Image (cartoon, rainbow, N blue to C red; front, side, top):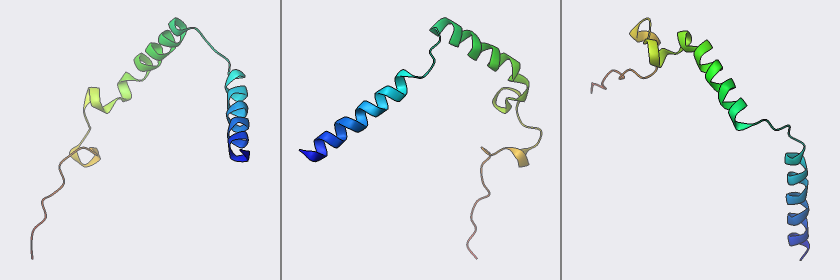
Length: 67
């Protein structure tokens, strides 16, 4: 019973914290995300590629050779 009461109190505290978060409309959030993506597309390696293979974290690693 005490564990259940403690759990309900922690849920209540979490809901109070979430209620205090400022909200914006979905359309405004979408516009902000689109602006961010467009402003940073020059830095996106998945769109523009990498300057060299050495900086590419997705390149295939060299194969392991048995000595």
